[in-house]
Length: 276
Image 1 (cartoon, helix red, strand yellow):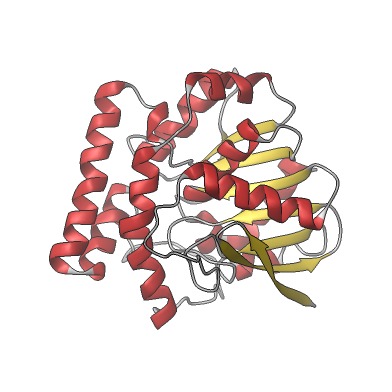
Image 2 (image 1 turned 90 degrees about the vertical axis):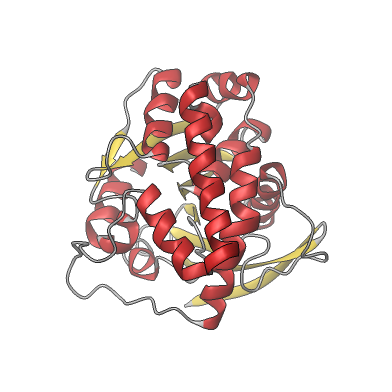
């Protein structure tokens, strides 16, 4: 059974869903993903975890009071913290994918003790990169936004998937993976991601002191990468550099950047082994 609720937070309402039994696991999605994304993965987690998914501010049913107002990473982290505080009085587990992993890192840095463990799968955190790589990444992502404005969201999605090392026409998947059609709501979420959220990624916000807080703080942080994600993809590089800073090595997950969608069974098995 899934429980669906709206949580009032400063300047918005957060739509979230709770399902399953066991330790609380917050799943923060990548890209345009809202609470309904990764349903195949969630199906394979609910016997072991109480899984919380949500629409981050500005997506789908999480409506901000002022949709034109930028949403910095610090606000996303505060939203996640308020959501966890409303649901549990114990440190939670978290899987963050790409944008969601960036939220998780900001949450762990700014709210020590909110998380027991964060699996940060290919975090979209360009500030982790050396200067030349960061500049190249910023140029690539700004080109995505320009493509959206000049040619529309379908052309921009093709460009951003190339940046992330994804070939949507030649993706291996597990059998019986649920298709995710492009609905009107999902198209709107793509538009928000390609403009507002890419600006948020580029603005960054993790300072050297935050990285030290992550290394020395109470949260166990596990940088993670997709096995088939090309090594030059920026957020795989971010995971590797984060692991270097933490004095560890990245955990490898099945498939590529979107392994949570293409290989939910194997992804859930790997995730459960890391959280066990």
